[in-house]
Length: 395
Image (cartoon, rainbow, N blue to C red; front, side, top):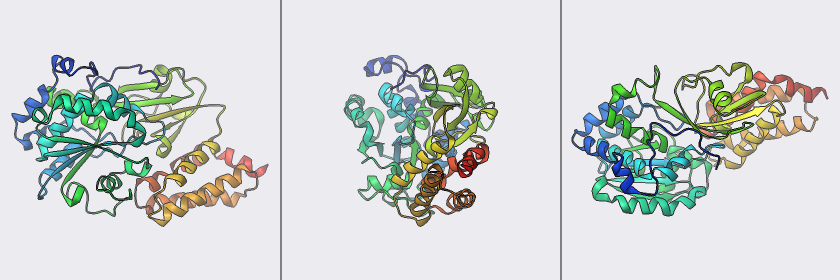
């Protein structure tokens, strides 16, 4: 794994080898503080902090908790989404390796807030090497201290299970496919009971919010996006790694000043499903309102082909589509065919028009985020680097 260049400030990572060290550095104080509050007081503090989900969609965390807490059911559940399957993302893996106790504390506070007794940590199959460490850390912590039971469930390597409804299907022992919505998880989630699903980084923000207060948290970041965001930076950079910066930081500061990128042609923010930002727009602030995604940042220099980038991304989605909905199942195959035809210099200008039209259809008609986001790199590279596509037709 690339070296981490900046310590995750909100996460407060200490000594991953010792729960004693975690306690000595103030571990579980936030949980004890939360338990002195009513569940609704905890929910309102998180809501007031403005914390938004770090999985890519940016949904307000406190609102999600409030909906689940107020939904009737025989049981309530919390799920930690550790299925970090987005291409180029490894920030959650860094957290899982270095501060499992802080993550468990955040999960326990979420359980207290919504009235859940059981939580699931859904670990992607490719992180199997972390399973033993996580189980040991859970055993060291114990259900009594957490006030809830946390169970680790492993995925089977399906990218689509990073989507929350497919993830729940997987935990229930079914094939990982997206559900039709509504209803949404806070009302009818795992086993049709109220469920909160947050990713690893989101839950790591809970401890400092409860420990230091919502007012403190809102002093970090930018306006509607308080706090910090962790990014996995790779590609054509001198210093790849995990970086944490406040929301609103310019993309150039992240990839050029911190990661050491030179001769930048474009940056893909958010992994294969993210947006492609040309070098001329590196002053773009990193917020949910501009570009963000799940935290993967891939830098491409002037030697890279944007058509090849789009082709690689679509190849990935054509492979990972669960096949449940036609626009995704067939659309990705057709996109891949059109891109391959262009790269083979046997395409026509009509093929470029077809790429645009099909991308628009998929973005509004696919069932889940996989299919809706699959054409993003096609749309953006056509907009900013359209000459590369047309040059292939002319030749």
